[in-house]
Length: 78
Image 1 (cartoon, one colour):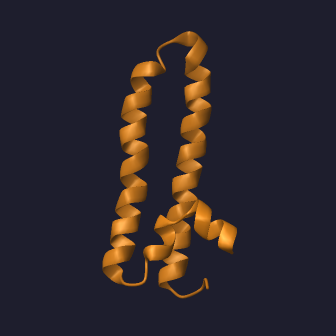
Image 2 (cartoon, helix red, strand yellow):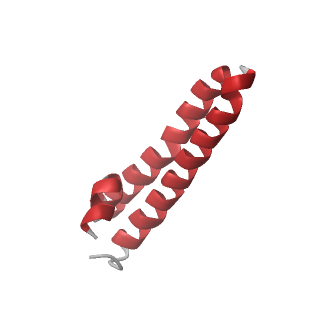
C-alpha cells in the first residue's frame, strides 16, 4: 500500500468531502490541460502516435486516481 500512496499521493488526501472534490477536480483538470497541449503536437506524424500512447496512460492514471480517492473517502483503503 505504501507504493500506491507514493504513486497516487493526491488520492489519499480525500478524508472529507472537500478534499475528495479537490482531488477529483485535479484528476479531471490534468488530462484536459495536457490534452489541449498535446493536440498541438499530435499533428506531427512521427510524434502523433507517441502522444496518443502518453495521453492514454495519463487518462488511465487519472481514472485510477479518482477511483482510489473515492475508495479512500469511503474508508475502504487503509
